[in-house]
Image 1 (tube, helix red, strand yellow):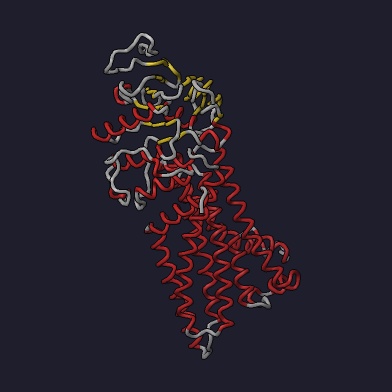
Image 2: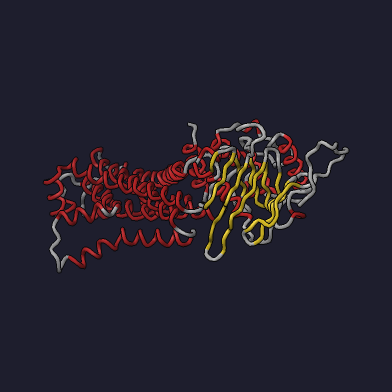
Length: 275
Length: 232
């Protein structure tokens, strides 16, 4: 492939996979995924059950929390670092658009993160494959898809933070704050408000769509339990109102909107700020 | 662009950073000129180069080959920029760096005008190179795609004597082929040598304090019809 976007994507991908940071997170993610899987299988055996379905569910939190943090940090550290190193000004002086810089960076970083996720879930799949029946693989595949979508959205948000920030340290700090808000802050805020204000399912759905981590988590749980039981009454509302496919499409759409919005904001920032 | 037309036109270039400002900078360079852009630290040399490269928003007009730089990609087809310091990724090889810039410019590395010995073997990783050799890689990247205007911010600061000789010879050859270069340096003595530079622009506190052609030192007698003038 020719053109600046594939050129930059390949460059960023190579740089990322060669870095100790990405290699380290790949090993850590694989080790955690295998540990969670083995512990889950052991618990199931302890209850006298067979199969691997619940084990996939236990991977959901790992699959949404760790890759989202990795994506935000990877994206946030990127443009700000390149700006500080002078490399962004060399690349920015080339006859390519700011959009190409954003898209190439995003594609390369997302590709490297997807490789990391594939290593992690691949390790878990190896453990599960010995005991799982074929239909039990579906929730794991759904979780992988949700995690890939979430990680892409988080890289895009991270790249936007990186483009707006005044330095690498500020970009990384912002990305951690954003992750804490997405991972815990919104849930805590809803829990604090719930006793005072009656929150209907529409408000909950809005809160989920405004939070990519929660959208990916609900998407994975929806695939794990097609009747929505894993999500409680809210699951019944979701499937009753939109249908299973409709609900999944809305959640996938939310992740896509987050991704596009992040890239658009990054592009705006690169046009307005000095490189 | 018509023959003899300016290749780089800077008019009313102004830029503010808090209380400091670049104020109404203006100069014109013809094809085949090497200009020394000199001035003390903080005089605005790097900012001028960054504005011309389209990396910094500014007031005024900058045209490269007749194309305003704020029009985006078109003007940047004709120029290359090397910042004062650049940290290339340690894990990349020399070949990968040059390949990246070739792909970004849609150019062919076979045309790279780099003399033998200027770079280490292209399979060498950047992380194993000395500071001077990393600078050589960055400079080589600037020549990819045969840009007509080179914006070089203290290009030889990290180079040893051999590297400087290589570089000035290279720049001299490119100048003779019609390439124009704007070379920033703190003082004329540390910038492009008299044998290479034929124009000087001196900045002080964001303003141009002198600008004009230089007397070029040549080996053979200069005929009365030659254009060279005394330094201003």
